[in-house]
Image (cartoon, rainbow, N blue to C red):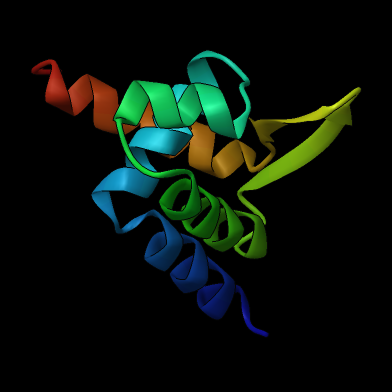
Length: 92
């Protein structure tokens, strides 16, 4: 896979409002599916589908802690991209 294809896959994974919200939330605070579900008010199955897409895109990683899985953003480029988006959102 070329670098352009890799970048394209990351952008596709981020190109959904719910996934973007999940990534922004995970950058602020690593959390599990239940916490994400409570914050976004969406069914657990929907959150799980979005998390799977983000994991497949190598944007997030789940780490098991006792009985739950905590997710964190592992793609540094995505973190930088989110920072740019937040700056633009706030008017630079």
